[in-house]
Amino acid sequence: MRAAALSIHTAPWVVPVSRPPIADGGVAVSDGRIVAVDEASAVVLVVDGREGLHPVLATLGPDATADGFDAAMQRQREMARSKAKFKMEQGLEYDGAAFSGWQSQPGGNTVQDALEFALAAIAGQPLGVICAGRTDAGVHATHQVVHFDTSVERPLSAWVRGVNSHLPDGVAVRWAQPVADAFHARFSARGRRYRYVLVNRPQRVGLWHGRVGWYHGPVDLAAMQDSCGRLLGEHDFSAFRAAGCQAKTPIKSMWRAEVRQCGSLFIFDFEASAFLHHMVRNLVGSL
Image (cartoon, rainbow, N blue to C red; front, side, top):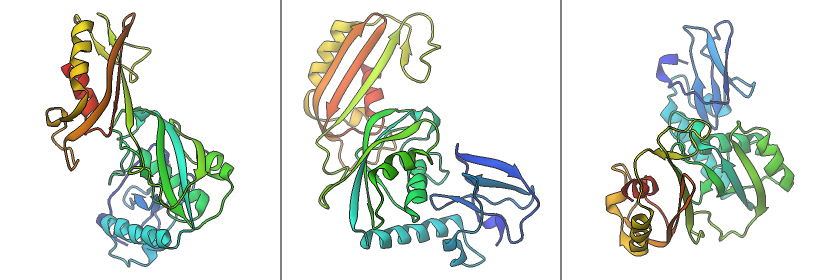
């Protein structure tokens, strides 16, 4: 296997160790993603203390690429879903500071990558998850809802404490339960809620770094509250979406938009049918 044909991915739960060169290249995987191939420096990245040739890689031949591996893993997940007997729902909380957002990326280091790796360790097979709403890099969650299909029977404690034992610090499963086949974490969701906390003082934050926004200039609470009222209802929020937003439509229904002050803290609460990429942080910045 040619190391040059494969991408190198890293993640917080991957531990680098030195060892002699491995014949045909050293490979370790995280949720079906090749996380290390490096014959030149004889360094192998080990996922959760395990390394070796993934069985899917063995079917791809000596010219396997990371893209080909991902495609093969996706086919395997789809096959698993077609044979699934159960649908499970989980509730998650996570600190987004250490992750590159929710959605799986070629470089790994996302909440979805971490969760699917942990689920695979419990199920003994790849499992794909779908969330209620993708979060951006640095965004935290207290009640993110996901679902997955599986043919594997496990006690509920395995889908909570068992999965947590394979998750990195900063992300945890709070609960799990079986749901009806018709349930879908994204399309069954009735709404999404975001809270943004802003510290308004001359000095930058230290203790709350990564947890709050900071602004040192004067803030007009009454003007912001008046503007929040104008956001309610169904509107085209194109002006508040990121340039790379992939949402099919910018038209969303805003049910709640409030801001209140508590000392030097300004707390913004938004509830809507859905949110666009960077929409909440752009709304707060505009207010």
